[in-house]
Length: 401
Picture 1 (cartoon, one colour):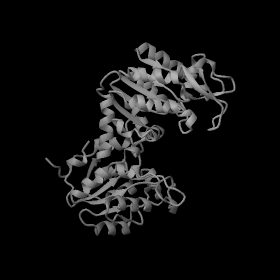
Picture 2 (cartoon, helix red, strand yellow):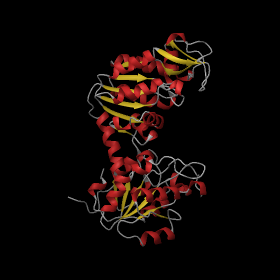
Picture 3 (tube, one colour):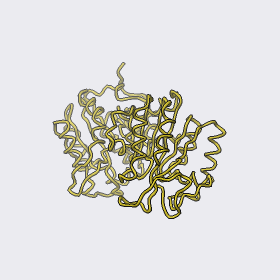
Picture 4 (cartoon, one colour):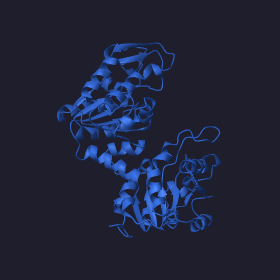
């Protein structure tokens, strides 16, 4: 996979696919510019090299037609503020007007294209749309890891038509860290998997068994495993159709010598609400009409002890409904245990990242992935279309020595 550092960008038109799908408030103002800042290293490298930088992204799900509320204009304004220089906004992402604006750019100039998903050809990976995007550039750069699990025109299709294609700094860094954790990890390798559903992470759990030494399960998905063991979990959320899968995973863990950890106690509530009545009970003693909303303190200590000797830790998914203070202790305990471990620590998923940010612990992790779905698909062992396209791209174009 060619990387942006390997390509001569001087004077070139460089199309950079980023993920500027940022959250907006009711006034159309950006409430979190983290995704914009994540693309800065690649954008600055291209600018400093004297490239004409054309930026492409999607915003929301407009379903193939213009939706004014999903314009990328707020992202153009915020990027201008961060860089201290003008980022021009194109009226579209393809067409004569965009070609004209791109043709008038000078070295170091930046142009942000309008929302790619205003065209149905983006999500449909339409060849004509991909060809039109490629016509804007001499070099295509994918720096949108969070979108690289989608076989969309601006992620995969464009590579077929661009003269030169390369990975941006963010995308390459994501893949490097993930490969460090899975290809030749320092052991013991521990995976902490939480969240609401087993169904969304079934593939990841099964693949973990082929790689990890320890598998720690928390969140509402742990209820399905507990019930599969014959534990009564009251009114807790359970996926009854996956009980057999849970049994298979537990049996496979035993056969492969993987230490599998489940909650031994829980914070239970009479309802999932900030003002609910709560208590801490052993996992086998959840009251019939109550539900498990977080792992309990004994479980938190057990999990922390299990992670104490790990040298590589991958974390995806919270331990409970951490958005509510009464049910945040378990997830915060995992933040503390993982961030304090003498290990390569990689976290992924929106909820996991939000919990780490809530604890102001981002700087204590080795890496926090920018892509929830893409991160999970890597955990499942899937190939990302955006990465596969770059790996298959021709090596043409002038490269630095």
